[in-house]
Image (tube, rainbow, N blue to C red; front, side):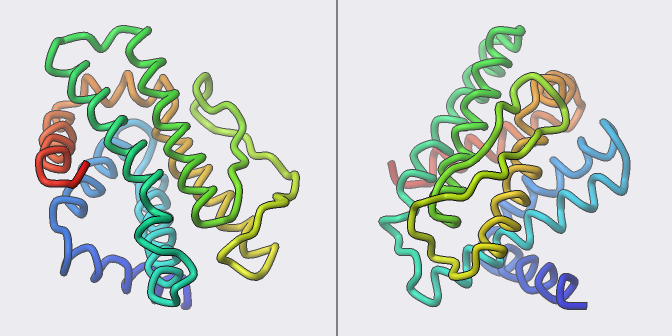
Length: 194
């Protein structure tokens, strides 16, 4: 019940404030459904909404600031640039896909660091299902409970790690809806502050 409420609230936040982001998530969900299954696509969507809800909650409670989000923005812009440039120049070969995978993994680490007080992600560039680290973070966290930190860290790792796998990126780059992903990323690059 609470998970559905969280998902619904986050979904409404995206719809109200950023339809381009919602479009990107929906297109990724379609690609995931075609890559694996409808159930995995729905899990991805719900997990993104829960992570978003947690981030908004931390921000509104002043546990993270706009400045805290700068490393995430920086790495996300790098992911966007890497993907759009590789696509634009028709260079989605194994080396490019591996670099993009590494950039997405770095994005995952930054999100974990900001939201959970430290990055803990295993190498997710070579498999389609990432593994997780169970070690404890010594960094301070905006989330008070260690079990909540670990749950969020795992959710971030599962969600972002899934789309960072080379196999998924390769599949997605050949998907008919991949251009919509690129258009959303280009829009982000053109309309966000550096």
